[in-house]
Length: 149
Image (cartoon, rainbow, N blue to C red; front, side):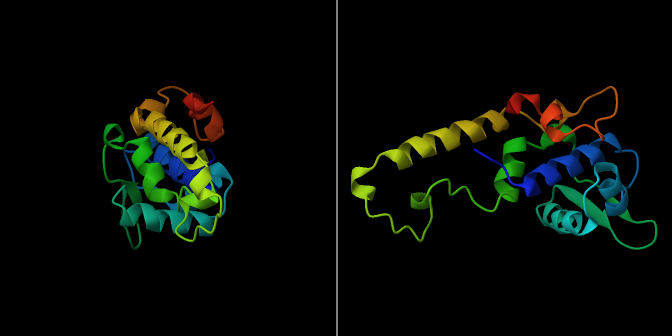
């Protein structure tokens, strides 16, 4: 299983906002902190805002903040709303043209693996991966989310 960079950036943004919950944060500062492009973060900000994970305030002095408490943000729900699809193999898609489907049990095995993958994330919230000491800003997401290994 593999998550897209969109999910990686969404988690980074949510973590950053959780670490700075005492104030509004900007796309520019988060992009600078993680060395990622502002246009990418703008798209993710829009998506997270539409999905009610973050709240955005426009205008001078504006920015963004978490719309929910970290304990209320389930990692599996973030993944399921941010990832474009989970078509691990062709037969997961609506445009399935596989001609061995009647003889192949791979779809069931892949679905079971996907369900287990999502179930692992369902056990954790943003609060669970938020480190209480030190700065997580400069650490790669792989180190922060050590249960993914």
